[in-house]
Amino acid sequence: MSEMTQAFTQTAFSNAPANPQLPTLPTGWPIGSYSSYEEAQRAVDHLADNDFPVTDVTIVGVEPMLVERVAGKLSWGRVLGSAAGSGAWFGLFVGLLLSMFGTGAGLLPIVIGLVAGVAFSMVFAAVSYGASRGKRDFVSHSQLVARRYDVLSQPRNAERGRELLAHLAARVGLNS
Image 1 (cartoon, rainbow, N blue to C red):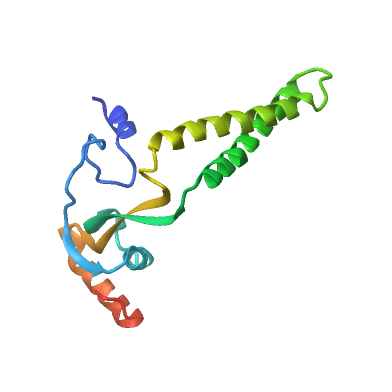
Image 2: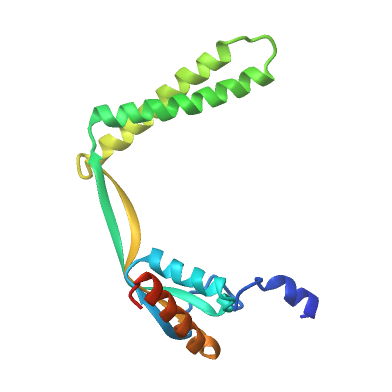
């Protein structure tokens, strides 16, 4: 492979492996540990502000957990109402497109799109909710979080990174 081809196949600003689709373990020495991702981001931002080579830095979430927060109970009314609302928006969009590209049709394509969008959306939502037979009668949102976030640096800059983060912790009161 020529140098020019190789330059365009690697990502800029990273020491990523040649095949980024394969999972790889992080490398480097720990230079800080934080209880939230926001604190770890603040630490890396501090390193960047102090001309630290942040391309050598990795934030690692340790002990990952999938957290599912329940947002509410599902009912036929909520399912059909939500489906009608989203179907109305989609139908309105399709109807507007049809009226823009149709000749002399007036408001008819918009009304037809709106009604069809609501109807189809409600039918599909009813079939889907009915098929679940009450096994999942709630709405939730999932998020991947970690117990702590370690900031790693390649060994060549780890000591300087620890010093910079120690100064940050003394100034802001972060756990490091």
